[in-house]
Length: 151
Image (tube, rainbow, N blue to C red):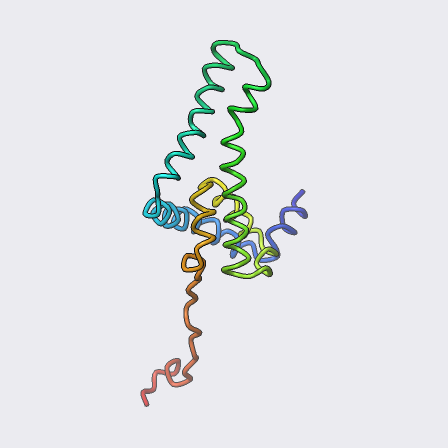
């Protein structure tokens, strides 16, 4: 089992642990960015998702209406919401970072996170301005900086 875990995270456990530790901060940034982009259509779509969950909780579980057709109808908005988010996450990951990023487990963690945002993720991913990924400029090493000399 430990071999499988090491194969999944790679040889450098410390880098994997640092990635996991930084996830809450990254998640908070994504939540704030998504909340700024909310539109009326997102609220309406999520209201359908919540209505489906409420029917499952009360109609199916409490009232005992075990109609398979109604259960599937109630869960359809959730399925569509997650599918839109999954597609949005894939579009962002591949379009913004590149298909080579799919080789890393962190990519699937992000795609799963985007799936939870559903229609919002899809709308943002399809907007080319929102797919821009800003990378820090490469730092050049200055030999005089490490030795304490000034030019």
